[in-house]
Image (cartoon, rainbow, N blue to C red; front, side, top):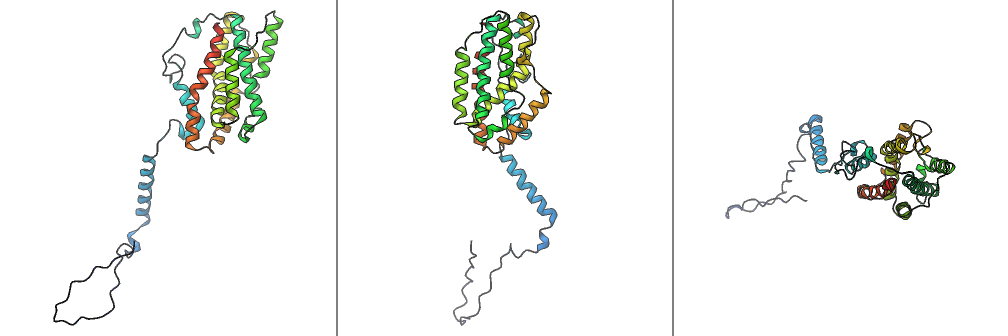
Length: 272
């Protein structure tokens, strides 16, 4: 804003008006000595401004460690209290240790799971969006292992069922999502593979002890160091998410509950 000089008091009437050059108004702030702004004071001002900005910014749980940690935090909150120490949901039904699975129900679970993994792996191979190519050949793929497992059951004389509604519905959902909404699709990708590598392995072991004489299926085996394979995918997801807006990240996180709903319906087939 331009400075406005105040009008001086009126001179007495008997004095002749004196014309002269108006004094230049003093710009007090600009004319302060440079020494008034020492480097130390400048740093203090910068720190104060940064601190105020940080206080005004909403921090998301896990955000400092990368977006995958945000996804993990949201997923943990959807676990039941007996599944994870960070779980908030009350347990429903019997705990896994008390399950009474059947071979028929377990086969339904494996068939529907294979349909979902087939779909996820076809989507990243086709790569409708460039970021999907990051997730080709991660080492977490499960389709081939499940195919070998189903062949083994067939050799044991078991009839292999057709995919049922839980698997068909989930496969169709992620297929449609992948063509228009990468953040939401990658939420399902993350939760499907990472959940299987953790709680999924524990459930597989318990079921095998009850109905398969402890046999470990190919579904629960990975080539190489699983922890490193998982870390590689975390790194890729974090890199992709760096290009997302906060709104896109929030949208991805909001999809977690749907992922749990679909996968839970498939898991319950074990007891059918």
